[in-house]
Length: 262
Image (cartoon, rainbow, N blue to C red; front, side, top):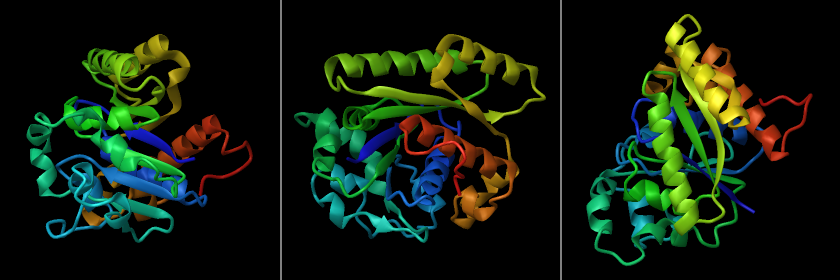
């Protein structure tokens, strides 16, 4: 059965898309068939996988409104086992369009109904808790939260968790917190270290042991249309994402000690 993981944070610039495409790529290297749904109107996951001309192709907007079935809209990437449902400019107006529709919070869930030819689907959500993210939360099995180690991190995290609880109570009773990954971590920063300690104190084993560092190669990779784990496998950032993938897959019971992630 396909597992759907929504990558969510209402704040931009926390490494959400970087986390999505690098985890998806790492999962694909062990033979898992993966689909990324680019659900962010900025389309960064799409361009980050080398897809430049997004204007003429069907995408997540067309699937969301029922114009095109999912199986006719996703694209094969240059990475084996990795596919993407791209985002194009039409998604930017979707928040307004959805307001007047019946069952507007369940459109993505309906579009994904019956899709079982992938092992995992990752949904790269927009940096807000609007109707697009709500659709992702209703459609997903679990939520992965990239969290930047900064002053307002805990406040933002509490908002996400409150939204998650409301969705569980009213719209998707089976949704779970997959985990929290600390991103852009700088061990030299007292603030980063303190925020990481506070998050671990409050959320305990829901916070992954792997921390994603600030790393120039992670920042460079999207401009070359590649995930960092393809662009520079040996850099510290890529190795951290491979370790995170191993940690998540171990949690899933897919991976076992002694195996390697790539």
